[in-house]
Length: 133
Image (tube, rainbow, N blue to C red; front, side, top):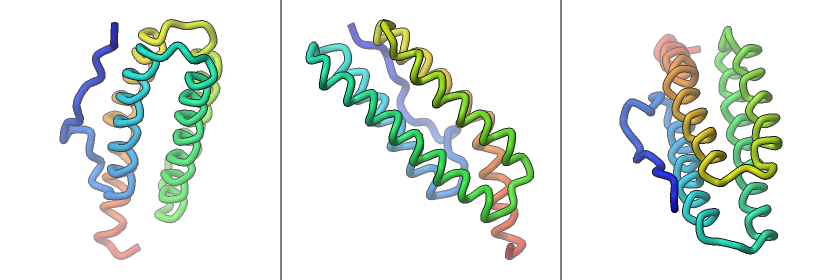
């Protein structure tokens, strides 16, 4: 049985092309993981898929944080801490959990973080871009 991964919605957009492109890819990766983890029994491949997710998350968080630094985002430290917490959670959530449980966590975190947290970065960066900073 596969977990239902939601389709992309406009409300997930931050209005910052670089972040939005990466978020689209992140959701596509989650969708791919859903399919692969539900059907694949090769432990090595499953482990490498999870490694791919963790590495992409690190890339995305670094990229997003670089934008926050570039534009002087005032809530950088708190947001960086949220990223570190997810990386920690990813490592223990993959240990012996069903793929449905893991994907439920991942999708819930992705949607909540994108809509509630990253939206603020988008608003700030767009505001700074308009003022010429």
